[in-house]
Length: 168
Length: 421
Ligand code: SF4
Image (cartoon, rainbow over all chains, first blue to last red; front, top):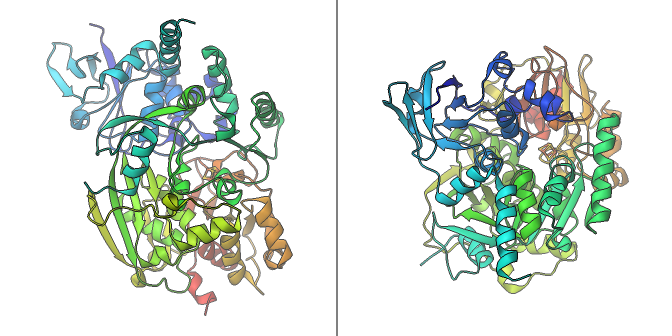
């Protein structure tokens, strides 16, 4: 099991913090470099692939801008675990292949902790394997979208299957 | 089984006799709205990747509002791409710089009760003012809708919010919403807010639009209002005739709500949301009279015809304070034309307001009228998150058009009621 780091934030991490309006015209590279800088300037430069972003209630509240989720995905974030997630952000993230899991245990997770994350079981464990947070598992069809890498690859697969089934 | 209006619309769109809360169903989309920011430039590559076109271009409405008019080569490029997309995909419902999407949709007769509609913008719940079930979404999801004409939804629970009684002078829909943000909070995720009561019944459609629009601030999936005679009359004026089933849509009397909240409208006073959250709202009487560098009358919730008329009531025969600037960005070109014709615009300009182009402008932080480090602003927009309107070191207060106009006159946050005797 790979060990990843927890980056913990508070309640109401909104889409303007994740994807600041000023950088919305530019590339995702540029935008992602400013992700969360207003509250955690070192985040974008230091986050490592697979790391977990943990939040309180209302994670991703605000605009429908998909770049809020895309910036996290671009930086390699493995999953978002929050006490509560805003619905558009939740759907956007999953549609981009970034799992968002809701858990009342999110509040107990410590910033900077080194942990293991298991998407299928929806758990966060410490290095010894003790469960730190149990999350609500994603329904199977959403898990499939995440595993396929997002909605577009998932749709591509489904459209191809339909195509074959209809014999064209 | 009794059902809410949302359940009825979802059931119809899913081809089911009825649906229950929590059930996951696939719905056929009646209308899909996109704008220049989250639309073509984000969905085009995805459609290409899927190798498909748009399922039904007649059901798509495309609005260029976020980056119009272009302020630099990048925004010009985004607009150019948007126009090409409209031509390529034969989207005839394309409004280019004619107004903000949530105002254009009803203004041009695209909204009606019973629609299952989606929008590539978080304030898409606006459509709920017309009794449509309309939800916001991001670009990838929109690409999925454009490709298939379908989307999955989990049938939401409904919270009924009733306002009863008459609004006092100077108190409007924006104040109701700011009060609700403070009372219900911003995390009503996956819930529908259903607005009802005599106050809502007495409101014009433009005020109802503000209620539904800002259901987004409550974190809700949408904010719906059952159609009534006001809805039908408004639509008739726009040439939209309603089939009887649409006009009659409503929640059953004994429908199950997750919660019912009742408010006494007469007790409501103007509210102001302090930085950096709409939920940080308080009566204007409890709000510090801070100096304002900029007052902004713009956005879908704050620069419609009625909104700018409110501002004119306050500004008539008065001047914007020295050391404060007032910007107005009418929500649509039709709005500008109407207000120019009846002299409202002249009142605003004589008071010292500066006219901005129609569009999202400073609201989303993309256009003109942004704030510098340390500046303080009051705006009639819907949200005041950190960094949204320019510098992340600026502070934005939210208020009704009345309150914004009164603050512009005083040069500090002010109660509009003293101007409205
Ligand atoms: S005016 Fe503001 S809130 Fe309305 S659609 Fe434009 S950016 Fe969004």
